[in-house]
Length: 210
Image (cartoon, rainbow, N blue to C red; front, side):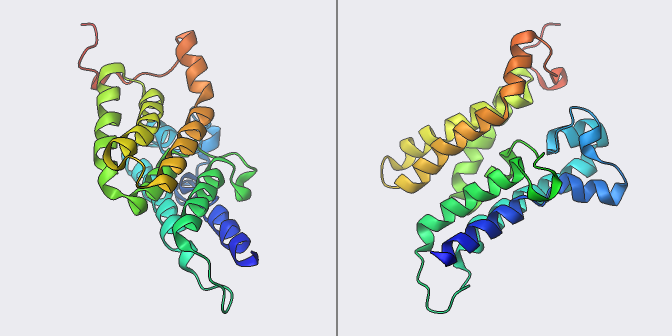
């Protein structure tokens, strides 16, 4: 049990390493003081540009992959036998929560999407391609990045059901839980969309009014 708790904490700690804070330290800016104040890659793109946002994205996706693929396999305690197939999902979830509530940055983090993508790349990279298509299509139709993120996260469990039915129950449960987490972290986006004040990328919309 001690082995499990150590690995979960390590995954959470890795998730707490914010890509925006590392990139911001290199550039001399605190991303939480500009734009929406969110520490994710979307706010980084809007306020600091593509190069900065790409670095943030790579770090945040990478830490999700590290938590899901590497942490569960660590032989931390001699003789400990912990089945990695389910511990990986727990560690993955801990990393996502670490991104949302980072230990090192006053529990003010991002919304978890990029780190979630990193975990899915470990569990089933083939699923990421159609999910990316859903994300892009939603942005093209609506222009809302936040909505595209939520729709994509909500699509994931149903895509898993369509592809695997009940053959991968742990992955299915993980996807359902994470879809709820993503909706929760985007609750402010939902309110702004209702109020009509949410930022919209009209340049990518094919169905926008001329």
